[in-house]
Image (cartoon, rainbow, N blue to C red; front, side, top):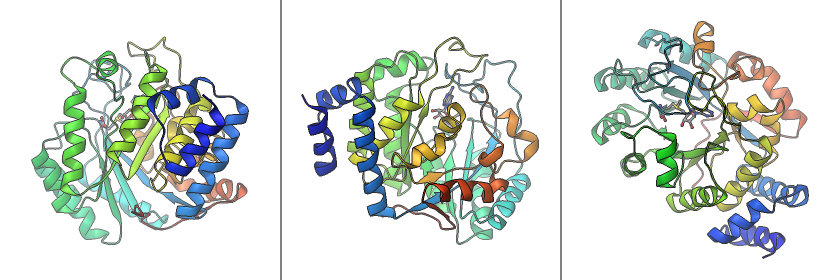
Length: 347
Ligand code: SAM
């Protein structure tokens, strides 16, 4: 096999076989990476120009009923600082975000029983009423189809639910036995059928991950055809069972982001907080590898340090929504521009 030919094929046909993807990942070097990044950039430019879409991220709760082995807010982490935002606090975040130029609000949180379907539906409906020109994205984990439908009917447009890994055996090593890949996939299917713009994704370098797992993730994304893909490095949290596992690298994350861009030319692809956390210029490097979205933190200052999914998670500097001007300068320095736009999928 020849890496150059696989990259050309990815560019021309937006696809590759499992074996080809494995080969490309395993044999990657600086040269193949640069070629991949250049093609991924040109694909993003073709579809979205040099626009970078911003989403205001509101982390609504650090309570979670789940016990994912990698996550700092897992229920058995007794040292996690717990908080939840009220409806008024969430609306205040949206008000501030709107003034800062955000036209997408992303509500993310642990699976917190406080937010019953009635409460969540009411919160979504209130944001929709107050901000008719904005997109509402939810990232609240696994819910019943009825709940997803109610949020959608109340005005939510998009839903982010990373599949985490497309390999059932790998999924079982990252999660407690009550969580399964099958139910995660059923949720993704339900979201799509209801009409959401859906985002799936995975962590790079999560414990026990193999190259074959990554290739299966890439092929799953291609077949699911989501509107958004969230990919960031795994970063250990000191109070989890994976405290001593090594973090994923920015280098492999960027390589995979570029492949995702080539396989899914129109996808909305964020340069994630985790990428910015392990590498100071991770966000810019993500954009130069084909990303076209950034999601600054719009949560109240008082809780930002409490949503600690992994150690040293960024929530200040250009990661903070209020530092939008600084973010704009960094993005402009590499030839792109931050836009005030809902930034919907161009299907
Ligand atoms: N509860 C919702 C869910 O399960 O989708 C949303 C919140 S969850 C904390 C958001 C994402 O954070 C997960 O999908 C996971 O990929 C990521 N995450 C959790 N722990 C992480 C870690 N240690 N390193 C990197 N990403 C992590």
